[in-house]
Every structure is written in structure tokens, then in C-alpha cells.
Length: 306
Length: 239
Image (cartoon, rainbow over all chains, first blue to last red; front, side):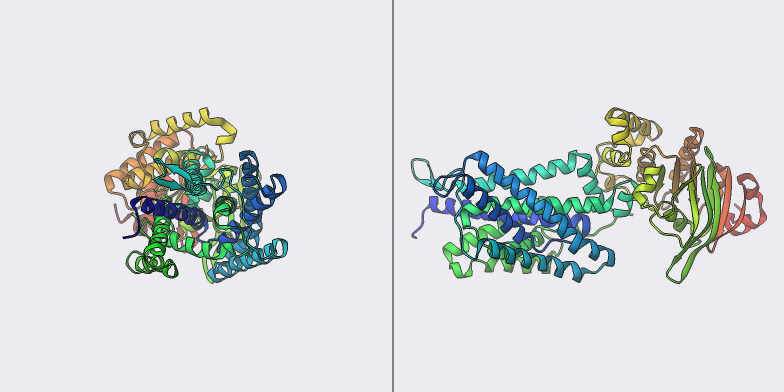
């Protein structure tokens, strides 16, 4: 055996960080699916745009050599979320609203995928097709714990903490605020929600704004770890969709479990089997879940109480 | 006062309402009785904007025209609709359901007034107070009906529409529901009640309409309808 316990812990830590990124994107899928039964298949490209925004802001204010200050990083995060939210309004108007009117599933699927392709092409025009490194405010030196026995990557730690804060924060908002309660009500029963005086289309638009803003913030988090490129979003978006299905599209925080399953299986397979096969177990799990428990691990089955 | 004039509604080729006219004067409880599929639910869904009429007028108060308004704006205008099958929000607590009922009011009246309204609903339906933190989906059918009515009251409606509050409930619970409706009437709440249980509805109502195949066939004071031989034969089954 040529690995140590410390190495295993680090692997798990990396898997958790990766899983939290998937979970964050999947969380966004779930928000819009719950309110509108549609989702934004260009979620990964919103992540990519968020990453590029943070790259550009940090490059212009801080430069290449130093890690950005927390203030600059926070500015990048807010800018990414704002851009994500604004673009979400366009996406919602162009791709989702017409589809909800006609009730055609094909049209929103194709329209959101198309907008993702357009976003990727625009990014390639602006930033080119290269990979760019972004600095994290925590730097990139590993943190040594237990006298050097255990090394963890601060960028991964930041992903885990920030993604958890974003998801728990939104769940808190959903439970405590009036608008949040309205989101849950629209998810449960649109007609009944409208009878409460809730403007249902506005709540659906709001859910897309939140979902896309979260994806863009995901890009700010993942950028320092993976490099930023126009093509970074596509595969992440697909895997996050798998996570969404594994956890259950209606499951709230079930996506965290889904994300961890995929993230850990990737890291462990890459280390102990082969990097070439790292995506295989996750998708095998996906297929098994679709066969055995189509509502996902934590999804609600469509049972109605009369 | 809610006034409906010559209302026509179609589902494709099926004509669900064919020129319905009725009046709901302030402070009165008006009932519309009729069998399954006669158009009762269609009538209420059209009033609250969930369905669009092909023809007709729905006037609230002096001259507020409701036809063509989106459902949330009809609610905002003061029409609360307690829908068929109760439709409470199952994953949210009883209190949250009531807060959502006050969605149009909260900004206007503020948190403190809204909490008073919730207390008010708890006074009318004491069972809801006991269950305030429970998820609405875990309530019994009767409790869900009370919650649905309470939730509709939270919007401080000028007119309350009630769609078959007896549906799927045990007779003893139905008794309780109708007792509460009588209490609401005593408090001066204007109501339009749609019911299959004709006798029960006529017991609490001031005035009634009988709807058949999308048309109002008979109307009159509730007392006289109860004794009308045509109504007796068709809906009361001698009971």
C-alpha cells in the first residue's frame, strides 16, 4: 500500500469540495424546478461567466502577482451574482416564459441549452479560449495541520464553507421571509398561491435570478482551483444535473448528499482506479437511482393526501 | 356587493357556463347548489381569474370590473377564494399558511395587525391554534378545511368564495364546518358558497341559486327554495 491515512483524508476533503460545487449548481436547478418545473441547462455557463467576472475584476484591481484582498474578492462575488441575476432575467424572458405559456418541454430545454452555447461563444470572443489562473484571497499555499501530517488546500476549504453558507442561507430565507414562503407556496401549488395574491410569474422569475446568481457565485469559488476558461462550465453543468437527480429534484438540501456522492466517488476512483474512469461510478450511481428510485434519494414521491 | 351578469365560459367546445347572472349583497351568504359538473367550480374559478370568460361582467362594489384581471389582482381587489379540495400548502406550517393568506395585506397593515388577524382566526377555529406549528399536510381533512377558510379570511376579503367546504368530510365534521360558516355570517362576512349538499347550504344561506348544465334554473330566498318541490325532488332526496 503506497498511501497514508493523511492522504486519504486529503482525498476525501477534495472530494467534498468538488461535491459542494456540484451541490451548489444542483441547488440552483432545484430552486427553479420547484417553482416552474423547468430548469436552466446553461447553469454551468453562468458559473463560467461568474468565474470570468471575478478573474477580470481581480486582474484589474489587484493584478496577477498578489492574492486579492477580501474586499476585492467580495466585490467580485457581488459583481458575479449581480451579472448572473441580470442575465437570468433575459434567460427567463426569452427561454422560459414562452415555454411556460405553450407548455412545451422541448422549447425550454433547447432554449436554455442554446443560451448556454451563446454565453460560451461570447466568453470566447472576449477572453479567448485559454485557461486563466485566478488567485484566491487565502492564497494557494497548503495549510499544514498536525505538524505537517495533514495538508489541506485553503481554496477547497473556502468552497466548502461558502457553498454551505449560500445554501443554508437560502433555506433560511425560504423559511423565514414572506417572499421565501411565497416561493415554497408556488412550488407546492401555483393556483392556490395565485389565490393568496402571489404574483406567480414574478416569483418564478425571482427563482431564476437566485438560481443563476448562485451559479455565478459558484464560478467565483471554483475559479482559483480549476483555472478559468470558456469551456469550464459545460461538464460541471451536466454533472450538477446528475447530482440534482441523485439527490432528488424536489429535495432541498438533498443535493448536498448527491454532490458528496459524486464528488467523493470521482476523487476516490481517480486515486485508486484510474483518472480515466473517475466519472464512471458517479454516472453508474445515477443510472441505478433512475432505475430504483426515480424521485432521487431524498425526493418526495408524488403522493397526494386526499 | 359582487354582481355577475351573463357569464359565459367554455372549455374548448364544451360550454360550461351559459349566461349565469347572480348577486352577492354585502353581509349576505348566497349559495349556489347543483350536482357534479353543473358548473359550480367553474363559476368560482372564473370569478377569481383562474379561468377567462368568453362573455359577461363580474363587478365588485360599485364599478370595479374583475373580468380580465390576473388571479393575484382579483385577490388584491378583495375577493378571497377558498378552493375545492382545500389546497392548503402541505409542506408549510399552519401559521405559515395563514401568513401566506395575508400576503396582500402584510405590507398594508404591518406585522402586529397581521398577528392579531391570526389570533382572530384561532378564535374562530381553536383547533388551528393547537396545531399552529404542525405542517398543514399532516392535518385531518376537517382541520385542513378550517385552515383553508382561515387562510382565505387572512386577506380581509370583501367577498369570500367557498367551493364545496363539505367535500370528503365525515358528517359530524360537516356539521362543524357549517356551524362555523353561520358564525362567519353573524360576523358580517359576505360569502358566496357553492355546494352539492343542497339542504345544508340552504340552511345557512340567505338566498340560493340552483345551477344546472351551466344555467341558473331556479333562484329564491333560501327558505322558499327548501320547500320548492323541484328542488326537493332533484337535490334533497326527500331529506
